[in-house]
Image 1 (tube, rainbow, N blue to C red):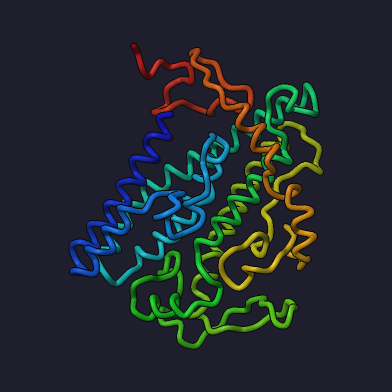
Image 2: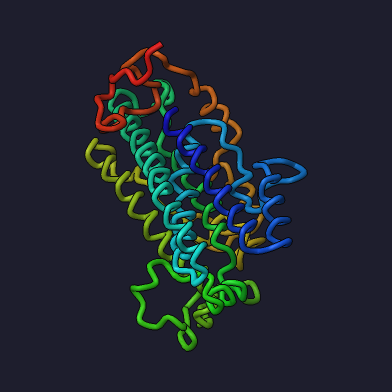
Length: 329
């Protein structure tokens, strides 16, 4: 609950930081855009957030942990790119936001690891962990598929003239731009798999127009590191090797970019819309999965006790023991 409060508080502060920049440096247009930012609400039918992932319902702790793991991690890479901006007020503002974003990602990554550890522990008692109030690995994989694919959309189109313009104008850089020797990116190219006449073909595209995909590469690599960590938790608990988490292919379940409007399976294979509809509940949370997760969301108030579906943290807040009484009535 403390982490939930802190994440929401800091996300609100990030909004106000952007509003401040718009109000302070962009005149009348900036003030109007700032007002629009303040009016938009997640999931509001009339004034929703612009980016789809931010309108996705988060009504339980499972969604919250996956949101902070994957969607906040998109924020990390977007903020890193903006911290390279030649517009100094923006660059300086995003650097302090990165510090707070790190905590949000920590909450998600460790929260999922705690769920994985609890699932592995329950599997020693009964492979059907739902009988014991746990969350089975296939269901956790579905939530991974959902939030990873939603968060990938936040990077924008794979081939983007806007990305090229932002880079050319010095408004955005790449992740840790100082790692690159060429900061102009005028001559390079990026090999990308694109759809042409219903087939996947490799194509070299100008590097500047592929800046969104360059950033997405860094994101995918970081997400894979976390997935490897969760799989090591399964290894340590002796879970059968065929039950391991896997990132879906970046073509899977995309609603933005060159793969939007086309259906792929989690391995990235092109499939028909009919097959995707038939197998969707195998890959993404079904209505019954969501109903089951919601049924687990019952408060546990006794000190030192936990819900049936999550394990204890490795250490408490500020290094305190898990049983520490943070709030006294």
